[in-house]
Length: 251
Image 1 (cartoon, rainbow, N blue to C red):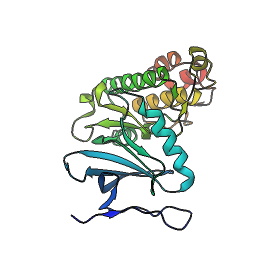
Image 2: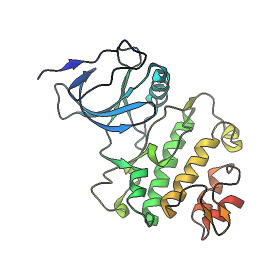
Image 3: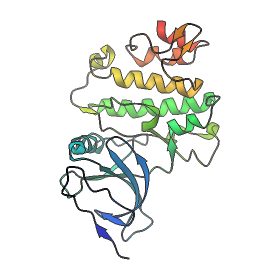
Image 4: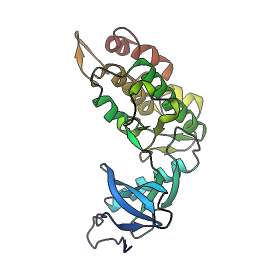
């Protein structure tokens, strides 16, 4: 099979890859995600074709540091609920991060396809999976800082009803804005290092159960208008309350 080796263009932006291009040991198949920092491709090993991976490629040289930060952050995180890093080379002609391929969809897509909200059991299992991933990250001095439905992947979600989703199906990814450094109980509780992570978890939980965007007015109360809760202990009761928007805003 003829393959092409990816090269950097002469312009400031990187030349976009195409299906059939080779990156490291892998042949690109198709795009499975596009974000502000670049593209995510489904790819297969050039010899062991049954080995499927996801490869993130930045779209601009200025985003290489995000790729390197993400690779450094997830390299030491070994947990079923964290997307596993396989390979990283920020100094290649085209920098890349090779990760495990999650055959499913994002939590954002799952929420959008269930307009009446997810079943309580599904929301519970997804929440536990997210928290277990964050616990692992925090214990390894890594703060995600960008928890949101689009960055949470659900394995097999396209092939089974939401109520069949298990804790093991949840994969937290996209650590590109993450922070690696000293994490203490005090820094987590007072929000100085992880308020975005805590707030993002609460927003994700609310969207799973109610399918109502943040900052939506309900009965004169704006969800998300109050300060970010100081810890996850104040989020779970709020998103599961009878009137979550007002409860969240006041608690």
